[in-house]
Picture 1 (tube, rainbow, N blue to C red):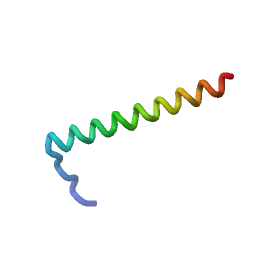
Picture 2: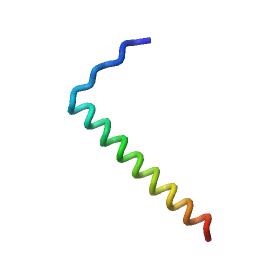
Picture 3: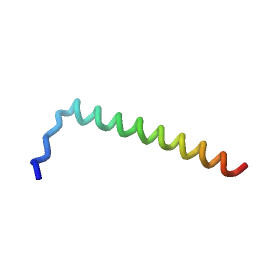
Length: 39
């Protein structure tokens, strides 16, 4: 396996923000799905 690449602080922060954005999208989707099933 290849050695893991070291990320610069800016690259690491970008990864964190992308992860947060994806989690927020998923959370919204799950909430909408849950509301649809309760009706």
